[in-house]
Length: 304
Image 1 (cartoon, rainbow, N blue to C red):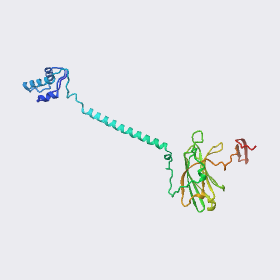
Image 2 (tube, one colour):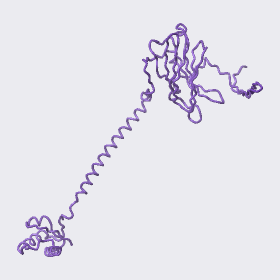
Image 3 (cartoon, rainbow, N blue to C red):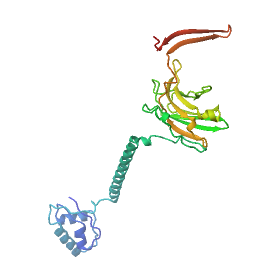
Image 4 (cartoon, rainbow, N blue to C red):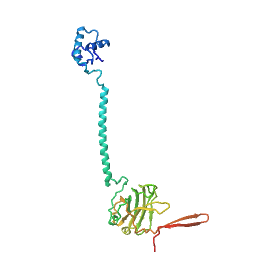
């Protein structure tokens, strides 16, 4: 059995409301209180009798238990429950926010307009976009051959071509990468050809190389600038990834041009593939002899 502490309560109604005994008689509760020195000794017998009377009235039902001060919820437990509720609320807010962000990212991935990243386009010069002509539009980009960032400037009968960088090139090697480089020349007078450095095992090379062609304005208007992207292969023919062809006569040279453009399929009319030949070279400086060994030929064009 249990008994409530009676700490100098002179008001009998307050005593009845504050504490009572469960499953015991009122007399036993009072005796237990005296045993633990919970009542003041100087209380009069009349006051004790009144207290016993009211305590017995409150605890008349031996099967019912009253509310004890000692069993009240402690303050730290209330703070803990409040903190848990706030934490659950914050978790719900974070979950809703993350779910919304994931949906937004999926929408951006499905939209091809958001897949083009132009952060690599930098420069202090004034830029102007080149409008694609009808010949250039016929190449198409169905095979997704990647993109090329280039710049053009014509001044004092000199055409400066800048090969900035390439992006999203297709993998041409078994390892899932490519060894790209760019070949630049002008047609129909293919007198000078430039090549960039080869960048190993990358699909997004940064070249930042410039080449200069000496050409007068009359010849410039009749010429076509060709920029071809190749995959370097040490032991076989280099694979062409894609190309760009620009009709120089349709360009406004009052501005420096710098833009991204999608690579198109290579032109088959210019490069006629006749086959492949494998050979080896050996040069001995002491004897000044060069030895050429023809090993094999394959994929030869049928002539009969």
